[in-house]
Amino acid sequence: MGNARSMAVATANREIEESQQRAIAARQAEQKPRNALEAMAVKLKISPQALQKTLRSTVFSACRSDEEFFALVVVANEYGLNPLLKEMYAFPAKGSGIVPMVSVDGWIRIMNEHPAFDGIEFDYHADEKGGIEAIEAIIYRKDRQHPVKVIEYLEECKRPTDPWKTAPRRMLRHRALMQGARVAFGFSGIFAEGDEEIEVGNVIDITPQAQTMPDRKTLGEELGDEIPNFDRNTGELVEDTQTDARGMTEVDEETARQADTGEWQEGRADEDMGEAHSDAEESPSDAKLRQIRESIAAAKNLAGLKHVDNEWVNARAVYDDDTAREVDAAIAAKWKELGQ
Image 1: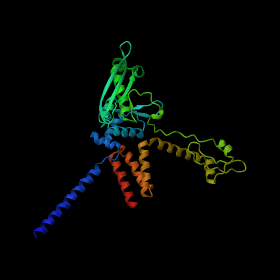
Image 2 (image 1 turned 90 degrees about the vertical axis):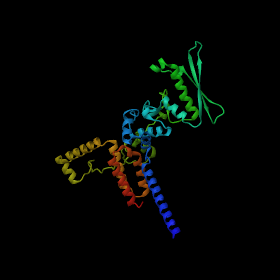
Image 3 (image 1 turned 45 degrees about the vertical axis):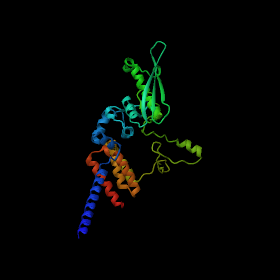
Image 4 (image 1 turned 45 degrees about the horizontal axis):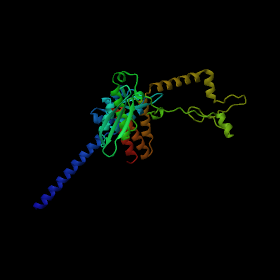
């Protein structure tokens, strides 16, 4: 009797413990960041909305779109950089796009946090008159027999700015440190202060490039075939309208009556004004939200809905809590509808 009671108590305790573990795992899953911005917000102990607003108005103010902004957030998370401490900021490149610019403090952080880092030394080189000519950074790695040496010359690095005029040795030492860290540890995708001459091919540029459609007559001559009419901006086919013996476009009787009385032109003008007004009022974030909602409703299978869900995860932090909960609920309902 006593053994049976002990076994029953042990079983009950085990079930309670397992239930507690499941509850803890569920809470941890709910608290797990869903995107790069939330991950950074958790680390900095600030709400994602407040973090985005702060970054957009300060160190990431050069970003012209959500895509550029989130690309920088991903880079900052990858290297463990804190933009609020100005360890990294957005730098507008020449022409278009942005680059993730890392300050000397940021380079020092990622170098010191690298598990193979084993110290750094600087070797100063003087010119014939005793002035500073170059500084060599000598970086030691625990997993290498020989150190990495990178030399930077004052003549190539100096800029016509106050810091370079008042403290050229310190600025050149910073330059040697940053370039040495880049070579020694293979840090990629980030730039050092002084890399202002950035090639367009190295920047984060997600601006859609306008596609020029080929000329219809040229295509017809090359292919020797009849090419249908199409819109040169969108590529959409434009149906050829039928004409009568006089070369006039055929229209239905109602359209002809409206054209004679002026009703058609008035209605068309109102419609065009309404469309223009609607387009002008819709912000990029509103357009994105509308597109996601439409995609949720149109999803026909689990694969399509999963794609929409992933897209929503990346954009979710931009919206307020009520909107986020509404879209989350819509996705959950669609999962259930499709049999998830």
